[in-house]
Length: 71
Image (cartoon, rainbow, N blue to C red; front, side, top):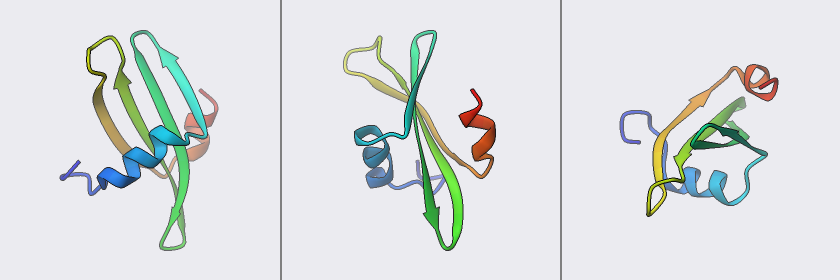
């Protein structure tokens, strides 16, 4: 999270209130579009729910919102 500049609070917000949740094999992808500094982007949080406790595999921001809503 440090390298990507994503704050823990941003990840928690997406996990609490995602726009959508996608299941891909053993990973659940929580995603939400957000606006920051006048620019829209999507924050995606990939969670491995087969591990106890659940584990965040990766989290990233993208400006290609339409690409991921087509998934």
